[in-house]
Length: 613
Image 1 (tube, rainbow, N blue to C red):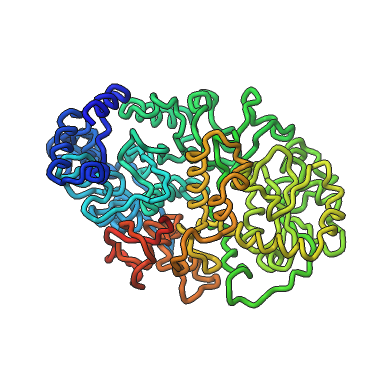
Image 2: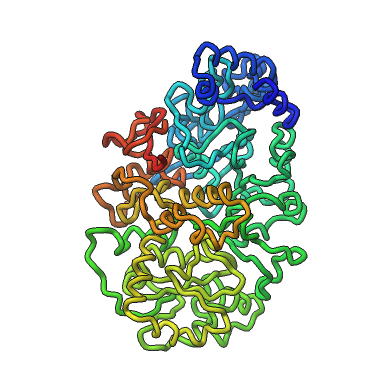
């Protein structure tokens, strides 16, 4: 073991001390395990906790791994000892959820509600001494064996993996930014929470499967903002330099994914796994203006196309889906539905042949325009620029167009959530979780040149084929919804939600590193069962609380509590909806215990639903 640790120190420039569970499992003798842990800690001085400047914890949090003092809003200095009450912090007036991050101490504003180990100040966790990290989940073990995740609370790593090392960046890179100025939920913070509550977080960077950077590229997309974050991790941890950026995960919520990034950033991150909404994997003439030297926006097998979080405009109406058990069955008496801008976003009166401006002509890659030209007056089809009945139109149609807009499009995901079979007709563009999950499995895919044949293609499906796709789309809808974060829409457990689908894909990359993503279903039975929404184990889990979408929309008796989680956090309750009916974020096996709804005054370190062995 001594030689192994020295080898690791040589390889990484520091030691990765083994976890207490590994040491105990190998040696079986607690006393020897403790001696070994202390010896490793002595040999690996870089792993020992570092002191922060005196007075740091008066107003800030001492990040003990680096000896860095993290400061709340409007506090600066090496020990957070300089206060500027007129400094920058986020203030927003809203009748339902006013925000003043200078003074607001509501725990729901903080990542994982600080795990009950600190006080929340406008999204920043001021952790109790001895606890640190963005959500106060980290501490050093008393036996000298290194950092713990939720030490002393029985945290159990996810038995299926993957193991993910989270870079603890200074708060200026994530929680001390205005998430409300970005026009979509903060995917990076939602992932941060679920990595912990899903049992995937590890402090052992040497043996980690993947590395996560909790930053939003939509906000930091300019090189002078994003590059400092990348430089910071390279200066303070060895893993980027050792891997060349491989197995590093960064969210990118932009309309055209990494094609929004400056060329200097794209070259620096050419090995990074980007989680993005946009899956354009080859050059498309309608989007030629976004390509840097014809570099694709998406690389299959490296990146993952992820679904957006349905929390805005007509997306919120997915709570009315006919897929929810107990709802009155709706007859799907319409063949095809699409509503949306044809010649551009919000251009409801502009339709072919009046799409003459070059931006109008390239909008949607020409897909919406061609569908409108061919089918807007076809009987049994509804192709319009807008509608006042989105929910009913989706629920009463057999097929729905999944078309992009200026960039990524959400209608294919929304249609699946309503049980409408999505129709994809954009060349060189992967949809959510493609190619790992082929949309032809539950939907319809045609080349753009065959759009004029779409009527005959859809009419050619037999009743049995149609029923099979409708059954499969019910499962696909679970993969596309972030139910474990936001809450359910069809009384689902969250086992197959978007986050867990990302984890399933990462497991396949770890298990079959040389396999093409399109072969995953044929290659691996466990993955195939997951795609088909077959539970991993027989233990029954209760359904999640239903997603809260607003006081005027339909609500159920099991609606997730407190509007502030959604209007202020934009990503569901602390820890995710998988934690709503429990008292603490610590991971244990078995179903969620109790039915006590967490309130701001009750937030404690925790226990959430788990689906691993």
